[in-house]
Length: 74
Image (cartoon, rainbow, N blue to C red; front, top):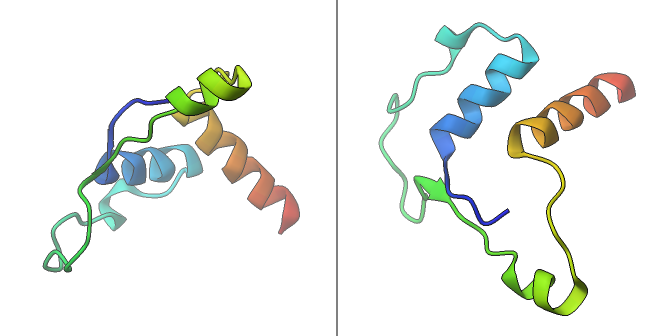
């Protein structure tokens, strides 16, 4: 979508949507590894320009759909 998201916030959203106990997530429990990124931000501008692509699903909705699909496949 071009929106920036911190990795820890994405992890928290996954735990929340999956109904996992939030205390299982322990940000900072291990040292940051070389090359590890604290946030993601992908641009969709080229897809918009070349393909007319416009994101239709929010990150949270996409995460929920992914969790639902994984549960259905299990």
